[in-house]
Amino acid sequence: MWRGALWPRLGFPLDESRDRKKPPRNRGTGVAMNPFSNLQAFKISITDHVATVMIARPPVNAQNSTFRDEITRIFDAFHEMPDVRAIVLTGEGRNFSAGADLKDRPDVTRPGAFPRHNRLVRAGFDCVMECGKPVIAAVNGAAIGAGCVLALVCDIIVVAEDSFMSMTEVEVGLAGGVRHVLRHFGQSNARLMLYTARRFSGPDLYRMNVASACVPQDQLLATAQGMAAEIASKVPLAVEAAKRGFTLTEYLPLSEGYRYEQTQTAALSRTEDTREAQLAFAEKRKPVFKGR
Image (cartoon, rainbow, N blue to C red; front, side, top):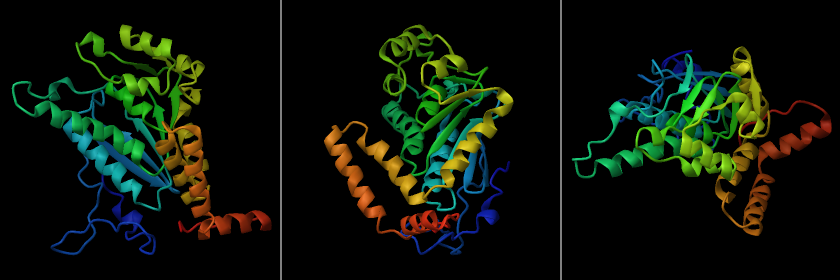
């Protein structure tokens, strides 16, 4: 793992021929800026098109303003990096994330403090949901409150057997997370979770179909990275289109959602990677994708 040591490994610009924004540059020098420099709350590593993002804010990986600024910067950068095709999000130590740092709450006496705070909190979750690359949450321990929500905004959830999720807002006089919980939990269990602050263990989450896999702690990261590698082996533009389909059609009527997906299929059929995938299938060889 590195804190901001990846820039030389990534070799920007990655592919200027793609219809994507080029990496930000320092106007004074014209040199590409490293979006992962000086990270305080995360560690990043990238291997074979799979990025691993590790929350590293001891002792419990609580979320504060620095955390939110950095996670937004990280996932916005991954969104535009063609060399990254799938992402694993996990926590360092015994916690995935124990939630919002209560020492970082807005000052209720300051006009405008809560709207600004709430907007930044949403951005810290939206950047994961809106990132064009699939994100796998590898929940290694406690995922509480905002930490639970952070896992729930990922595309796929893998949990360790000794991990748990809980929403403890009612214990500290706060509210939030209901809508995110309802995306994954049934109505009764969602209410039980929110009204009681009860913990749901890794096996509970797997049984309730919240998690796709529940494995021993020492197998968690490898399991999540294996899933990410499988995703990374597929046609990159098609995977991005699939994620876009999940994000944009979630609340659309069936007919409108499917019609949107058909437009994506038509667009993909004109890409080099789709032609390469079909040719490689016919020739029984491994495809080589260029991201265009």
